[in-house]
Image 1: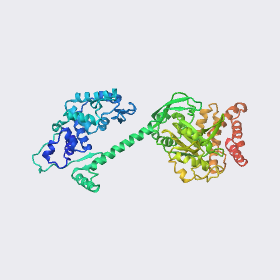
Image 2 (image 1 turned 90 degrees about the vertical axis):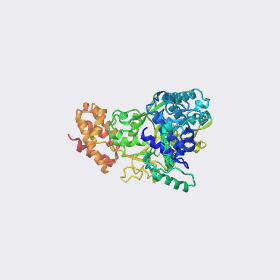
Image 3 (image 1 turned 120 degrees about the vertical axis):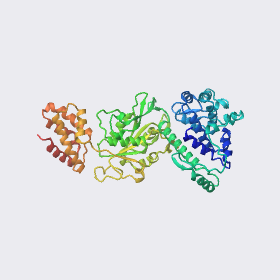
Image 4 (image 1 turned 180 degrees about the vertical axis):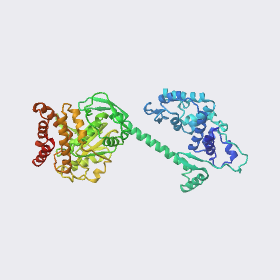
Length: 566
């Protein structure tokens, strides 16, 4: 007999109080073990013996029965069960089946196992299968989770079986004979010393008025509770409320959510992306999912932080200068994962009506027309708060409960409550990080956000301009007919310009979109003008200089004259 389970079983049996060692020896029938040990200890005794008897057990047929039975609601494979004895399980595994069985159910299984592995296998498969076909099954068919089954077999004398030959507890013949020193064993990831645990249990019993009698049982229950919390949390995160969305035109789309490695999704190899993210397969074209831009280059550090915030449902704030690609980062992340994107711009024209909704009228009848936020909340989507540091007070107040992960209360619609979809996520973009603009470039629109509002964001991400070299790679891929000479001149101009922008010499931003437009203009006019310098000079003038104020325009002309050369 393996020493591992023999020692644990012997210790469990010796916890029967007020019995001599000889009397303990005779307490080895199935029913007596249940009657004289607490439920947790009896489960451990039976599990140890069953594991030994079924070491080479073939669970194939039982797994099949579990997947089909109404007694085993196997997440992802089974179906919601209305049977009164049903047990919720994540997978059809032997360990989960035995963990779901109480001491009485395990006693019945042990009784069958003692008659041989085939008998136990057939009994389990038959019981699970019978209930799956007949929800009104008798107590025998409702085994292994029904107490009625235990009572029925008990009345037949099945549970009077003595299992001392399986436990192998040796009687010494003397009550006062010195016992071997207790071993230190690992139990529920804690190391227990049986020489002191009884003392601790007596102290706990006295302190709690008899309510706490075994610290090991409490710790095991806590471990089980933690496991259940993790399982339920995973189910909430993994299982959408529904798999169907309705578009504004009344059409419906279904989706299938899948977890995939971020490196595979974005086709980027980096340890920062070596984790699973949620992606979606839609039944048809979804207009809310952005299109993939094959020329877009991701900043891996920023992308990793953004995907982490979505995976863990932490609100993220993306900061950086105008035109650096903050919104595009979110847009393309949604595009590659096929995630719906709802965008709300916090400009001077935005209002609570746009965000939450308003009462409207049609054909003489009034109704409430949802704003962008409640529409997004009910779907597996990303809600982008663009230019969040320009938001007015009524907007930030309306967003606060949602930023905390709470439902949205719409008082204007009779107190309607909008529950957030489990896959609903929030990300904000801004030129600053909520503390105002010290550079003066965004002072007209940026407002200092309250620390209470900013505290609701947990991940802050910085997105800066690409290096001129990286930016020109993107430009050349978008405008392949741009000559090498024109490309170099634009790159030289961009390098000096970005330095001047960061130093505050100019306040007119040049985004990658501006650079691509300049390249298109230069590529178009160079064949006509026969000179790269004149073509690029024309592009800079029409795309940048004429859009800037007078002070900036003079500085930009100086940069162009210096960098474009002959």
